Length: 125
Image 1 (cartoon, helix red, strand yellow):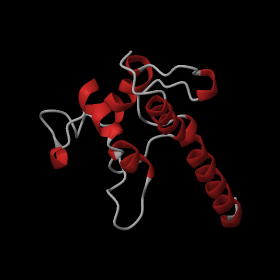
Image 2 (cartoon, one colour):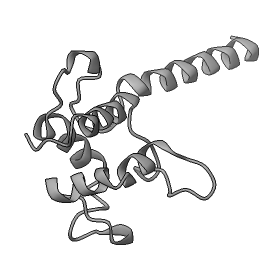
Image 3 (cartoon, helix red, strand yellow):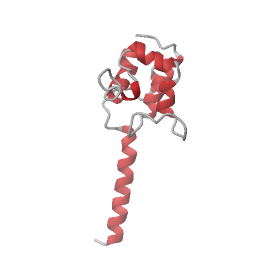
Image 4 (tube, helix red, strand yellow):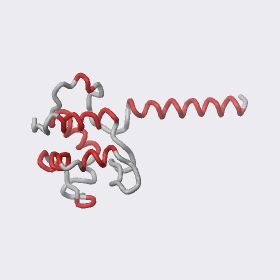
């Protein structure tokens, strides 16, 4: 097998793996990525599993990085009400808060679930 063929094969393989990441990330949240099917976002069914899978390892009562604790409805809804949650899961530019989760990012559909939940009034359901 020639080096050119092997290099091309490896590049194509690596690109296909990176494209698969968005569809099957390593996080364990079970969010329905077809948010059009979610007419009403549920805190317990849709939002909390995202937070639990991606945020609590650094932001619970024991490991409260930067003093941020978001392990229950009250804390999570307050962060959303103040705009902090959306800032850290969507923005990534100089002078802003660091993008979360640390070392990665939420899937776009997970961000959309949180955004829709905020728009729907942060209902505790």
